[in-house]
Length: 518
Image (cartoon, rainbow, N blue to C red; front, side):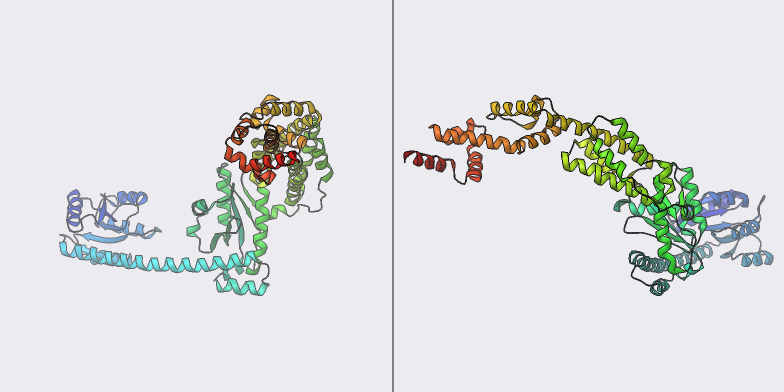
């Protein structure tokens, strides 16, 4: 549906034109009205108009002034003049301002309809050309993106090969200077969100109005923007400062050229965005701000080993003090981001993973927190620090309880006595751990360390041992023995017995009877 603005100081003409057009082209137009040029400009400020039909002589602002003002606008509506004066001066002005038609009053219906049909044909052709142009531009952009992704992902290309690949993709404008920006969504860009996130960033930076700009996702799901315009970067920075909860971080390279330097720019932007984890408020991290970051550092390996050794010893204050030293923000800010990445790796390998390997998996809460601190880029540094501290204190408590169980065999003795008294009942590990007042996870690991078997394996062995005794010393039926030692049914009992002993319960009884008769 087209939008049509009728401008005339006589109301009956405005209404009459609408009725005339609506009868011939039912539903084809949305109508707007103005009594003079000034009112018309107000409508044009608020609404996108396809066609303006305007009178010439009107109060406040006449039609010629209106047409002149329309020429100054970026988005121009087509104009048809409707005048009661066959004046050559008006006609000349209409030609100068590219007016589509100059119609005289009184209106001849067929002449007006002919003009509207011709304009509709022009609009359709213009749309077709625009669609073809958009398709061509899209194909070229897709090819350029493919070439860029290829260059950025593979270091095997020499500089001259990079130049040839990007030259084929019509990216020669990179020679005049460019910057690479990396925009990373908090938590990563999931497939279903990528298009929406890209559209959001496009609106922020004004991508549609930039001729020399290209953007795409890299294999790490980060949005890469390559542009010759520093204005885009400033728009992004302004938006991030004004919207602290924007949900993304950004890093940008220095301005560089020629096009062969695109890989260097990409690496700079990737390194820059990594520092966003240290920001207290969102902003674009610029590569030139990071040149003084030292890579000559020594990782605090000894302190991290001390933290690991302190777990379970009731020395929480010492753990906190060591962690504060290891993750001292002033020290971290002096060094390259690889320093913090190295600390994170050491904490994961020598503390968290080690605890899980030695003492078994803790509660679901501990595991959940471990996933959070496994990557420093999951949260801002402040949150990362306190998540690590919380996890260490939980692990400290966990290790202390496990060790206390190891050191106090009476708890395991009580648990085993309880199992031996009730093995024939519907028994499970939760019942036993509750009986001895131990955490379920702690009990599971401690029981295995004490007996060498899991709870399920230990209970099964005990039941089978009692069953074998009954098979050798009683005349009870197999199904009676099965029920008396706690198996849910005789079929299950027979299958488990045969898996362990290699023979069925009846065969086992017969073998032992034969041996006793000898």
